[in-house]
Image (cartoon, rainbow, N blue to C red; front, top):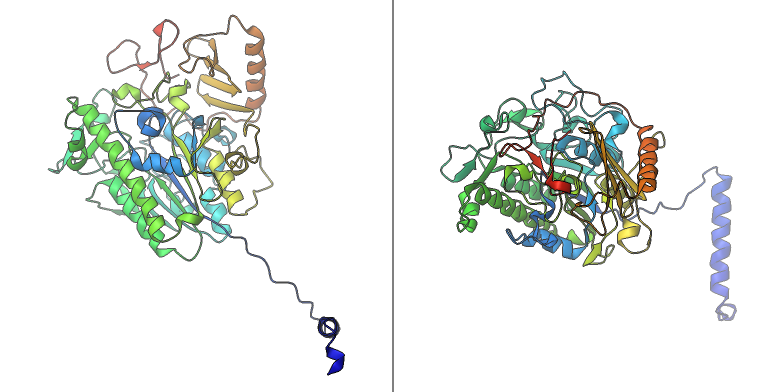
Length: 499
């Protein structure tokens, strides 16, 4: 036993035994590999509001409606003050979120036509890889509850494009609840073509459970939040991707009376109903976050909250804060949106991030967080935001961002933004750091910057395709007609068409 009193003897002996064992295994033709290290993959929750204005959340300074749950989410992570949608309308911006690419790369420039018959227009091309398809390949359970609006072909619905579960509407809008119910307040906007008849659930506004059309009696904002919570309960032990694209606060304006009662001091019923819709959305966000906390999953869940475009200010209730423009225009009010990213332990709580970020970044950020690999056969325009929001990378995620919607185009580079208003073949140049409301057109006084940004825009457009379908017969807004004008605060207080 004396020979083992040397403390080095036992380790040496064990090493010798290990070497002899490995030699034996290799001699037998079996080559063992070390156990694979499985990284800790977070759950991913993407919550998308519909037509929510930049100023419609109190975290961005609004006083009309308090949004404590959305504000709390911002305080838990990063509030991105320069968050952008990739389009001034619903479906093209959703296409960018789902693919991580400028939608112009595959012709999804305009709204998916709301009244398109089944199987007449493809919508999201089949060779695009959705975020759900990407994460599903990485072992994630996937679910979507809400508004799809990127195609209604029978083989191009959510369950065809990577989602294990789906409950919602395929089209651009639907009734939140039966308008005849005693507990709901309605406010129609008859000047918008079709809006007066939008309180329905047929055709493109039907509700689907998977591929089966179903009847739904409850208020949709509540329904989507409840189903999101049920999905979380069912997937506590494996990573999941949960996409909740609410149809709130898109028209038709409807809110249950328990929400409109909160704003009974507001004499304008249009605003009262709209504010109730915001309150319901805020409660729904809070319900999802609370479920993550109850299940203990909040510590390892990446949460993104944003809107598909700016507020529809022409509906006389949505609020884009200090920004000019509304949904449909490429002024800031049409494309700058609420944008929040939260991940406990990864993004410092209380971060206020001022560099421009975009909807398409959600895809790339989620894939990076899940330790995935992007497809090599296509360019991705989204950026992994985690190094930037965590403070590890001090540079701007996007040196330049681009937009195009029909005749209108825009490019942002640093503080500078160039907007081409195609309706009148005119360029507008703004310094957003000094002129957030885009009141002062600097194009005439800075032709060199105009030329530089025009060239950047032209170079970007070489990588895009023409629109795959028409503009969807959007109404031509007539300047000056009450309730029927796209407007903005700007040079000479001009009124603008959408395109």
